[in-house]
Image (tube, rainbow, N blue to C red; front, side):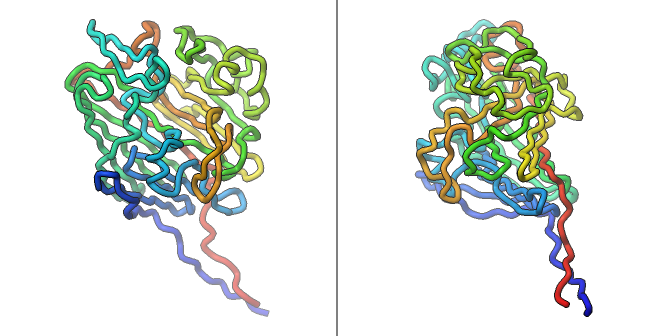
Length: 376
């Protein structure tokens, strides 16, 4: 009996582009697909500069899409879009009272969550069409997307030029680098609102996922989900993820902060002090062995467990997304910081450059199986 060793095609580090529909006014939307040699695939679309899909093999080599979203552009344009995979701006998270004071001048912003501004207002960066260009840097491939936000958009002062640069490498690292410049002082806080389910998008829950957050404090919120201004310890509370624990272990505890949010939807104050080499967060799905590690330059992360996902619509691959079927790790500066004197500054001034880098590293980073035994 003999065995023949046969080579299979080795996956390539590459980026491609294809149409993804048109806006109502005819503006084309593009979908980019980045692949690496570990059989990881990341898809991006230019509507909202979104992460559309991330396919990652599990510990057995079986690949699944682990991000929530829609099969087509129409889904993202519809009323059921929950910021799936979108770039968020001009200011991520909430601004209380839809009002900011910048250098002594009050600015009334777009109120789209009761009296508050959420994720940049009624038409934030998530609902804008971004210009785009792909690149191949040898050890990485990527896509750079740009958007020009005019003075007064959603009430924010000043013109703002924004760039988001996505890169993928063969270590299963998806790097998001944001930069922005302005011509008038303005609040800026950018992030991405990608939802993950490491068991596979459309699986009914993330409560069995095991999470770790390198954060010993958080910013508690009032009844309107606006920070009180305090930085409180997570010790002896259900918000303590300093050691690995199941997301579902304490999510329904009788704790004021969990009751207000319907679960986890808070800003954790990272202990990493802006050092991108230090682990900020890790989430593991035990059955598949898939994991996600986050590293960031930002001082905070909004850990959200999809408490408000409605579940009554059809999404990618004919799946539905019930509450708590996805989680977000949104690296950010603090919510409502322009109105909180003791929070880190979020006002960008002319001559300065906003810069933010976040890395999502996906596990297991298995090498591709590029050989197999064929026949007797």
